[in-house]
Image (cartoon, rainbow, N blue to C red):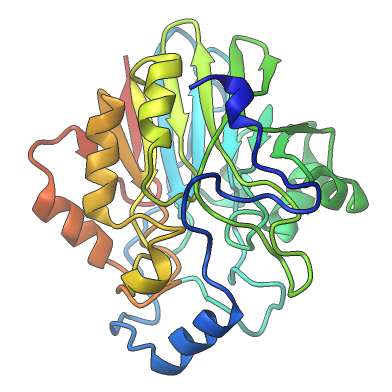
Length: 314
């Protein structure tokens, strides 16, 4: 699959998932909410012991820490990269309503090292959290890598510099090239902007290894295409949560069984689960994705980290 083909998912007004199911519409969302039977989960789980990451990591090893949800801190050779950061109490435009935090971040804000680059995969509130991004912009000098159409929102908040990418495009930082790759999802922050900005995953090409961060995605042929284009990654971050009910969620979110299939198709040496355990966004329980992944995993190559837990990749 050529990178030129990856870029052809825009009809002039809106982005879409090429040759794949689209996200359910308003009536289906209403049907889900009226018939939803979410699994019961604790209001809050006080089991996170925050970690203090090093300010920098030297050498060729990669240190990957799960902060929470889809927020990952990647550290290698003096470079600190943060994905889809959220420290807010709710994944919502409002502070008093919307999905609330059920677990603490695994890193206290004051212990977060200086961030060189922030990768944003799409504009949903659990992945693009403006209060967190404002704090990052006020306290540091980060570069923001975002999918097409998202930079406008960041610039309106004086957050930047922001560099937009479409599928197949790349941006180089010191010691790493960041490639924007397909995901099967959608975008919206309100009722009138659906799919007006792009969604994506990222392949991080270091000298020593490939790292794939899937962001939010359904299962699809893009995993095989990414492996064909770049080769098998040494490390992949794959989402496992917010997958029930399947009739509604399957066009935009993988379940744990599909994440395992994606891990195998990619040929990843190690995969780490993201998008679970902090916010209950769908009908599956807070820790149901973790249990399902553990039950289905044939070996320990697909890892589940607690908030604040790190893995070192040689």
